[in-house]
Length: 145
Image (cartoon, rainbow, N blue to C red; front, top):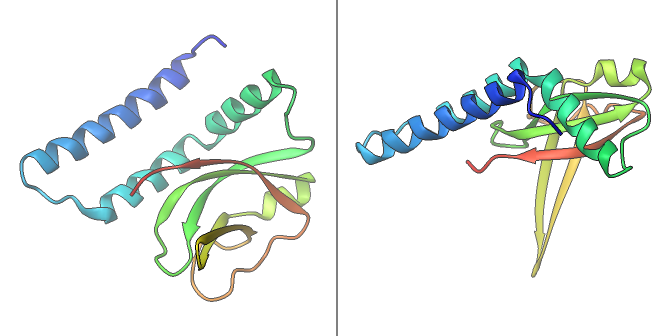
């Protein structure tokens, strides 16, 4: 796959963000999780279509492309409310259009850990997520916070 100007721009934006966070840590400035999650939200919001195209192309090259309409939305951590990544959702166009975010719920069971991703029609991670019906998660992009 040949890199485009947009994909190079995304890589540069992410790289500059990482560099800024690293420089802040090196100087003893705690930029905090708020800036990190805000940056993730900004990147997902600004480049959602490009991220969606990238995921669709990458899956298509492996003959694993999702069938139906797709959209990239932020992943919210239930309880913390922070943006922790992006998810590509898939389904019929009318169902995909309603999705605003994917809520991530994590639980531990002894030595096992479960991570549940729920497409939702709201962009808030509080209370019970309003599950978006007829939609599934086809890909996940995670950022370490």
